[in-house]
Length: 303
Image (cartoon, rainbow, N blue to C red; front, side, top):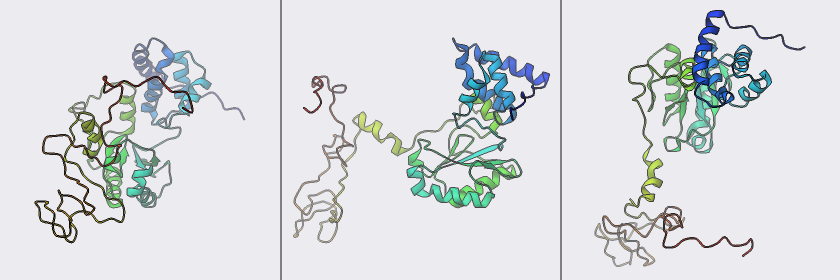
């Protein structure tokens, strides 16, 4: 059966949304480029993108409802059915999963009595598993309305959703203070977050996230040596004291030579080390970073 045309917004709601939509559309040289923020705008009104919202976007942008629907159903941030005040997403991508994300997700499903993409009866929490949030050094990560809650455990995640349902104040690990999903959608539509201190709030990357940047800047520390699996690391039986001089067995302390006699001394303090965990960790001279050794012409396949 063909669906009937969706109902219109009430006149006062329509007038308010039109005023907001015109502000958004004015930011773009081509009006159809405003479709993504307009979908967030209508989502901020009802908590999900309704057929009425899609029709509104189509009318404001001169598009067909089919064109709007194609976009609204492609992106997972646009909800297509009523959802909770708090979207609780548990990262189940590889690293978070092995660090406990799978266990957290399964425990929350049982604890809340909902499945993936479902909402609790009180309308407070929608639970879903989500893909990588680029916060692997804080794994396992849970997000609430796209704000980070890092280094979670089964018990801490249960406490988090209980607090959300009880209306208790919940603070993200980093980033802006938490707000409802509708408020988040309006911010994503491009309107300012007017809560005091919300704009100034921010969160830094974790130490592991910045290792590559430090290596690129030449800020390498003392070398660390990873020994082959099954071999004994320096400092085991027969090793010398802290000075690192070789003992009778030929082994050394933490900064001396290894059992096989190969030197693993770190570079003197303040000097870059020539030894790294692996070749992937070492800064490499490339045509971009080393103008004195530019790359030659590209070789033909098979050369």
